[in-house]
Amino acid sequence: MRLRLVMGILSLWGALWGWAGQPGVYVVQKGDTLTAIAREHGVSVSALAKLNDLELDDIIRPGQKLKLPEGAGKAERPAPAKTVTVRKNDNLTLIAREHGVDVLDLARANGLTLDSIIHPGQRLVIPEGPVAAERSPLPATVRRAIEQAPVRKGRWRYIVIHHSATTAGTPRAMDAYHRRVRHMENGLAYHFVIGNGHGMKDGEIYVGQRWKRQLPGGHLSSARLNEVSVGICLVGDFNRSKPTRRQLESLEALLQALLERCGLEPDAVTTHKRIVPGHTECPGRLFSLKSVLRGLGSG
Image (cartoon, rainbow, N blue to C red; front, side, top):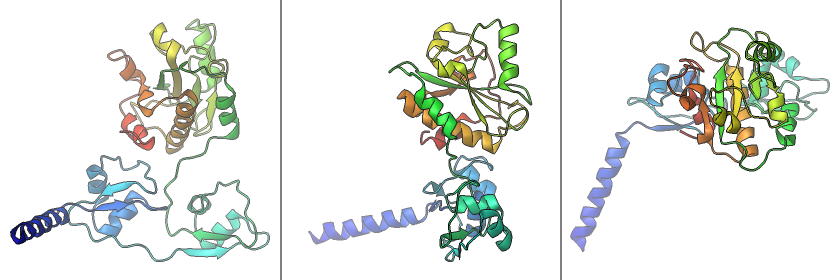
């Protein structure tokens, strides 16, 4: 009995020793960035990103667990955040200017948008550095369009992501091209378009008639797949440059809403080149589906 107890203690000690020798784990806090976490633990940001299979410009979120490279310093929590009490006639811009911070960072640090109303007596956190963006809420008009569409159960099986393969674009121009050149009776081939700041606002979501009327897409070469695939086009040529941060935030919010509305799981999200392999590079070499799926809690 005593021998078994001693052996058990030695086994536990060995396991703990082995675990302690592995890279640590850091839980992302509100306001963290990859750069700030790397600096805090004395490691390079590229090593931290590579270890966690991230790109340097990927979005990280509170609660996300990151592996720390070997040799990282012990994680230490930052000092208590500086706060300020809102006074009469204050607004986010005035408070940001007074404390020398970016107004968007101030809003994000407090879970607000630039349009949020603040009230006297309200306490706000003053960020010490850039705040990582959390999932952007969908505009009310887009959410209503998603909720009000007459979606039948089992109507959709896939959500397919495309790029326009152009540096600028608008739904109107795409619609004209699809009608006149592609001879599509219902015009715009996609159900949704997300702008990049050139022709549309950066991150702006356009809801097409194909979604509102629950029509098949025209974005794939297969009529069978068009019948069951929602098409989302991001304006841009992602063989030349990556999607903008706002585009990715809007895409993630849109995908989340569509998955819920259509009763689908994240594995229903795919790209043009994956659903029709060998036919196209769309949405380009610099678009990371893996990163998008990670944001949806998959992959």
